[in-house]
Image (tube, rainbow, N blue to C red; front, side):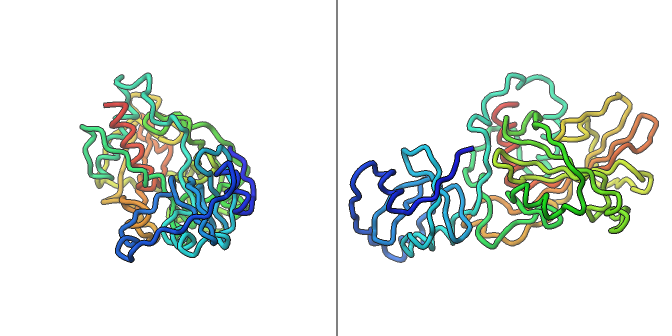
Length: 344
């Protein structure tokens, strides 16, 4: 991960410009021009309070400091917002996400197994077609805003207070009394961005489950394991809840189910016997709505979390597991794009 260095803006400008600082007059724009300008955090114009400016890729901000990589400089720096012009401060706070999804730079390269019969790709395609109400017959155009997080003070909830792109360590600390020590694995599921995610699995403490209600499937206490999918910056991008005990108490819904082979998309587990039964139930239409964000400013897609229920029964009909997968719409569209590009 690229290290961050804290600098004054003057020192940063010296590095970025690789020479003496040159004062430039801020460009005058009419209010109409400003209102239609699209803020591009990947090529943002950063203007100092005295009018000097650079172009930079913004990595994130917290409303007080902004982390950025100046153009033609291979290092991340942290700059106080108060050192910037009022216009730049307002542009960042109003239009720039506080964080971005961090994928491998070659995440969408063609997969060597693309085109082969793939039951997981088939299951993902069936699921995403319903949840995104879209066709995979042609390659989608990639939308850079799918990588955007949320604006300041508009954190989107994936599940039970866990926010999209929230640091893993923050969630682990907050759920210390609920979770045991976890373990992680690389996500290798076809269709998912390559070399980009890890799955952390945390057993839910037995005492927490019984204290909070082990039979409540709407709460974390109703499950044996919490799965957290994180990106290359260890930010949470999706959640799964897995139950493997007291399964006879969970009725099977018969609405909008389809038969599948994949038991766990994040951990890439499939049914182990031909007669075993995996039934997947996408929500209708798109799961649990996230907190109100501003799609016009931060992305063109829905700020929705798609909830998927997965029932897994043995060949003799015994319930082996029940799980729920919570996937933000932005991630679902990235996966759909990757499938359309590399598996069709």
